[in-house]
Length: 75
Image 1 (cartoon, rainbow, N blue to C red):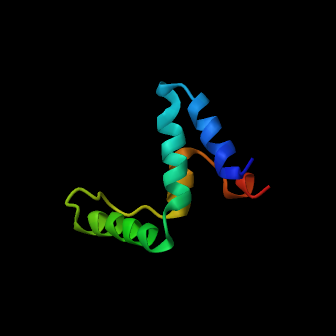
Image 2 (image 1 turned 30 degrees about the vertical axis):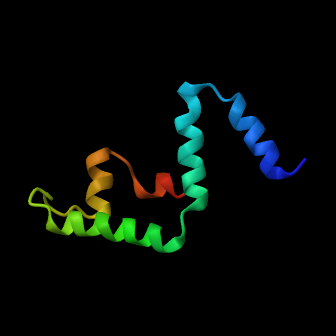
C-alpha cells in the first residue's frame, strides 16, 4: 500500500468535526514558500497601514511591565 493510499484511508476515518485540522495541516504541507512569503508580506503591510498600532515598547520595558527579569528567562 502506498503512502497516499494510507493517507486517504486515514482521512476517511477522521470524523467530520475534526477534518478542519487535517485540511489545515495538508494546506500547510502543500503551500509553497512564495505563498508563505506573500502572506507574511500582507501581514506586514496591514500592520504598517494600521492606524491603531499603539506605541513601541522595548524588550527591556516589556520585561519590566511583565515583572520578569532578563536573566530569569535565559536559563
